[in-house]
Amino acid sequence: MCRQLGDDELNDLFAASWHDYETRSFAPVLGRSCGWVGEQERGQLVGFVNVAGDGGVHAVILDTTARPEARRIGLGIELVKAAALETRGRGARWLHVDCEPHLAGFYVRSDSDPTTAGLVAL
Image (cartoon, rainbow, N blue to C red; front, side):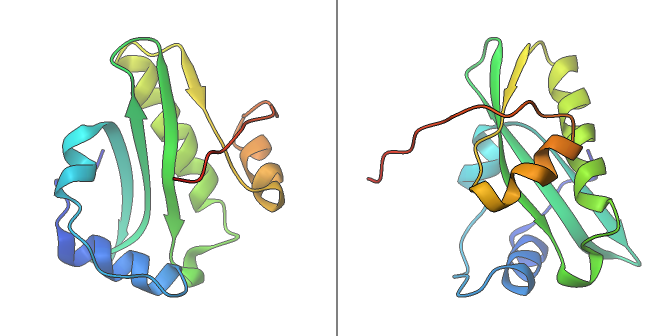
């Protein structure tokens, strides 16, 4: 994990990385997180992965994000792997990854086994 992150730098990262992103408070997200990793270069947050957990053996990868200029150089894969190590160290035994089909190859390169997952729109 890198140092504590604030709303300004997380919102800056997400706005640079996601089309139509809307600024929000990350306090509820990080407050419920069982761990997260981030990467900074020259004082700027360039990548972030959040992990939520059930307090037991299951956790799930959320919010994998890298600035466009930091993509396709292995940063995201290293962040996911670091998040897995951090999560294992906290007692989880299963790290779930649910992603859109076009991202499956990325997660396989991050040592994820392909599975089928469901999604309920709320």
